[in-house]
Amino acid sequence: MKKKLLSVLLCTAMLTTVLAGCGSGSDSGSDSGSAPAAEAPAADAGTSEEPAAEAPAAEASSSEEAEVYMFIASPEYADAINTLIEEYKNVAPNVTINYETTQNDYPTLLKAKLNSGEVPDIFSSTSGKEIDVYKEYSFDLSGQALESTMQPAVAAMMASPEDGSGLYGIAIKGNYFGMIYNKAIFEECGIAEFPQTVSDMEAACEKISAAGYKPFTTGFNEWWVFKHVWQHFLDAAAANAGVSAAELVAKFEKGEAKVADYPELYNNFFNFIDLVVKYGDDKPLETALDGELSAFGTGKAAMVVGQGAWVEADLLAIDPNLQIGFNGYPVSDDAAQCQVIAGSDQALRIAADSDALQATLDFVNWWYTSDYGKAWFIDVAGVVPPVVSDVESTFEVVKQGDALSASNGAADLSICYSTDSWHQTFGEIMQSYISGAADKDASCAQIEEQWAAIDGAN
Image (spheres, rainbow, N blue to C red):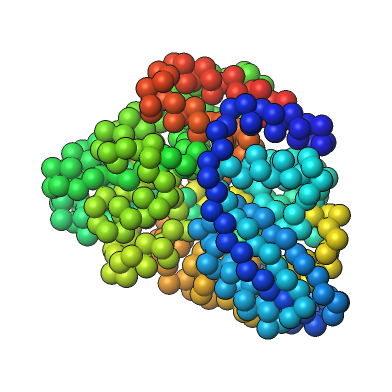
């Protein structure tokens, strides 16, 4: 996408978005001599097709002082990234890494920076379709040392969707998306297995509520929670229509599809949102991520909506003995469609015209090839590693996600077929629906109109 179009998207986002407050974290890291070479271990059977070749040594960095500005989303990883930056001080004492993070308003703030010419040295976007949205600003990492350790499935999401070429990002994580639930509460309520169908979920909510627990905590104050839920129902709608999720998204972008044409979306998705509001937080639109973590971590709620592997470390910090369960969303009355979603949804981009390009490349190559950097994904961040690794995760979401993917397959990471500009607008439409400002039909009409207007223009 050219800069002119980014300006159009920025105007669209600012017309439809009330900026939320942002949280930030910062730390400084340092400059390196040579980043250590790393030998790629055998592939993890749960996350990769084939082992990677031996990783070449990362290029030697300059001993000159440099500053790297890292502006990314995902504040849930702030502590882990600050730990990574602190470790890098031991490798590169002459490089300062200024780290800033935010969530709700990130797409709007990023576009403002890009349009003003203040491109961060490291910035983030959704992978997939947004690779091309920011392609002109992004350095092609093909041939860098990190390419040899990256999971093939992750690398595929970092290539240009237009022609499949290039490597325009790295990932903080692979990922699993699904429903996190409290096994102890389910057992207390006499629910032997996680509900696999829409009707089973409704029955489970009645039992959990009767036992004195909140069935759900929602996080509906966050626009991005909605896209994580929606994609499960979109995958089912595409499968039942005999098309791929990418094809269905393209139909909406072209204005050729209506939400009402797909019962998995028009009925099941909206019914699920209604169910969550009925059995969820007292003020769902005021509950953000921290509220979800508190409600679930303290045992007040049985299920947490719109989250995934990235929240487990924070939940265990609240209660180390929490009995975490993980499964897909019941999206229909076909239990086989209750699947987790696997893939890498976020890309960290390196600015092509960065004044600190070599220092930035040295840092990300060290991150992906050094022994510490590769171990960081599991040992510190607690995520599905985007690099080839034979280290087994201790996190339940990752272990259960691996098992469910092996036994029941994983659904498509369909959020990557749309841009964050669209997803943010979608989240705001759903917030209006929950508040009662728009009914279902009006919300569906807005979804169709905005999808075509925002992503159909690309």
